[in-house]
Image (tube, rainbow, N blue to C red):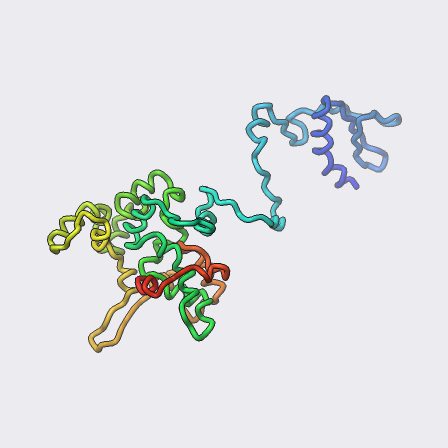
Length: 312
């Protein structure tokens, strides 16, 4: 009983402070039980308590603080189950992955702006649509087994340009990134932090970060040396974008005996062998890569064979 009363103290003090700062009487009976009341006891000596911001840990907010926190959402108690949301999630700039998953739903015509398309081409060498839809197109890949609906299969059949660097990143769209990153993406197709560590640039691209970051500035000259036409067109210049070692290995090649070889550094990055990864673990990896989820209602999205071949 004593414990319950003690727990109710802050509530009592706060409530009474809000209705005129009434006096509180505290006394201990013959059994040693502590009592609180707004009326003085008749047969006991009581201590008078006036609620203030310094009593029993109660902090009374100033008017300014109240206004500042008026619309601040409360956080759930530790251990409390998450509150179910029965409505469709609302896209917001603070949640780019959620925004991305519903970005083009119910959109007629082009879903991406010219600015977004340009940055996607700089980063991936492909329009935004191809990277945006790759998980769904993998789901539609013709198979005789259920492996198409398996996270392992989908990751394996991803565009080689999508890899470790993209884990945890959404599509590089203007609405999803900061002003600083958008400037970097417009210049080279790289996020600012990707060009901040010289050793990483050398490891991934065998070039300095300066060369990698300025590839688009130097592309027209390379294009003209190759006697290509339309060297002022982006679709011609993106052929000279930096290709990472990871992308090269994922694409693979032929060895001296005529066989093919390939490595998947993204699968190696999760620090487990392919045959040891559960589909649940791989689903977590898949969810962290850009592109919309493989929901069944998206099976009717058009993924032509020609478009699919461009992934490989």
